Amino acid sequence: MSDTTPFPLIDAETERLLFALARRERLARDTNDWDGLQAAYWPGSRVRVTWFDGTIEQFVDGSRASVKPGKVHGFHSIDPVRAEQSGDRALVESRGQVLLRPVVEGVECDLVSWCRFVSGFERRDGEWRMAFFDNIYVKDTVIPTLGAFPEIDRELLDGSRVAYRWLSYTNARRGIPVSQDLPGDDREDLVAAFWSDCRAWMQG
Image (cartoon, rainbow, N blue to C red; front, side, top):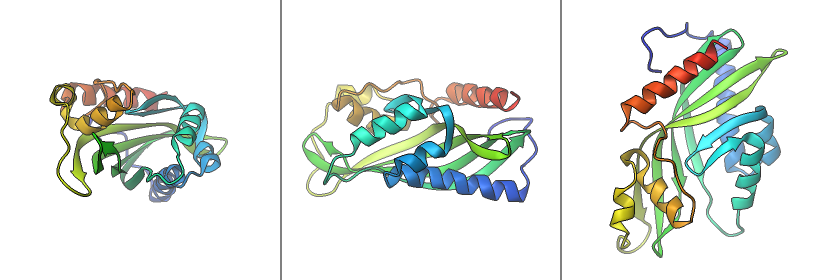
């Protein structure tokens, strides 16, 4: 985590618990375990990804609606690497990937996005659940599964941020606008502002 005065590192037992909860949340999303996904969060918690920014309840509804029979859905790899705690709030940062198989201009492709997942946890009555989920985007790429690279709209692609260029492109082609102000390694100012907000949240 980027900060000159970090909170003390979390104790090992709590770290193991929060790491497990962070992994379980992504597994629930990838396996269409909607009850498990919603139960990982406190009611009204915020989720922000390229295609969505809203509450966990809305995210579950939107994710459920996106599932189509016979379609290859998204998959997340997640490796929690760091946790910090301040009282009843904690942050977990994970390295990870978003693995998708979109059709890009008529060509089936694998889309890989490298991310730093950031999960905010809150303890209430002795129970830890997530209070928000966010990302710092690093880079992404598209690789055709068969055949040649698709003919793309260069103007649309060039208008997207490097940190999540292909996520922006493929969502835009589906009619889903993607904010160009999300935290990403190509914009140090946005990453610094993001961590500042996280630190303020940690302090309550």
